[in-house]
Amino acid sequence: MAFPTSRTVLATLVLSVALAGCPSDDFQSFDSNQGDSGSDGDMLVSDAARRAVLSDIGASIIVPALRAFSDDADALQVAVDAHADDPGDATARDAAQAAWQAAMASWQRNEVLQLGPAGRASGIDATPGGADLRAQIYTYPFRTPCAIDEAALDGQAANENTAINIKGLGALEYLLYFDGANPDCPPPSGADLTTARAAYAQRLADFIAVVADDLVTRWEPSGGDFLAQWSNAGAGSSVYARPQDALDALSVALFYVEQETKDRKIAGPTGIGATSVTPCGEANCPDRLESQLSMRSGAHIRANLVAFRDVFTGVDTGMGMNDLLRGIDRGDLADDLITELDATLARLDGLDPNYDTAITEIPDNDTCINASANRTGEPPCALHGDISAAMDIFRGPIVGALSLATPSRAAGDND
Image (cartoon, rainbow, N blue to C red; front, side, top):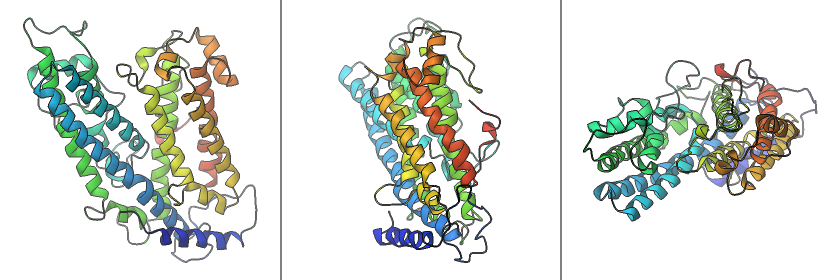
């Protein structure tokens, strides 16, 4: 449930009043230790200001995104069940594919918000309150088509113990879109692969719907109320000792757009490559597209970028991270970031006919690298230049100004 508008208005007024007494300083940064005692003090950088922004992001962005996905996962379950009932019915399969597209678009917003229960519980870049639920829903970039077919033919169950390379929305795409026998692993003679795939898709969709409901319930005020842990960071939260800890978790989650969207989803298929992505050595690499079978890779990139942008601007009159930047007289950084994000979205939306097809039309690697550097020329390559410009602002000046944490995996990444 979203907080009342009056709460948002009050928080905004608090920031506005404080702004009047705050000196302008181009080098001013967000002191992560300031205000930890809980004193109201300077509201621009106090714990109260941080909590006001966290509350609006949680209530207006995170929880609604999880609710939307849970609803779409339920619809996907219904559609895939109907497909499994009659695997040969083209209309039922089309409906299942359409439901998958809607659920996947919905989940791509949550890819950028891997916080709390959705995030890692342990290991590198573990997040406070992490319960690894994202790995039960989507496991990009891990997917092994032959192993998926084997699981389908063997009648394997779909549950939390299922290997990550054969479950989730990625495996479901393969099952719903791949036609006929896979030449890399033809089925045994006489095997009914169509029926087996549909049945396994049904088990996967059923499991995804269960996990989606679990995830949103953990955040809901009427359920596990992780929203309260998030919104009350440093003021009674048992998960976040300070509001800055929650902001750090948000920062690490937002680096998804740097490491996955920019590097893996754009630098990989274009052949440009990145620190974490080995160049494919070809003029273009369509086999590295996130969703080559459904031709929805561009739509996924767009959803990632819009979610990232919403966190900075806020939605529905709520505050975003831009308010914290404006509170320390660095609203210019927020404005610059939004300008570059909008340029990236405009370039993506202008690709004809779409990102997935445009990748196959890249003529050679040198042309692509130059287009990225100059942000002109081959559209999908210039897109890489656009998103790089946006992420340079985020991972450098904004992270520095707000004293935000960065992922361990981002260390030394200067692409």
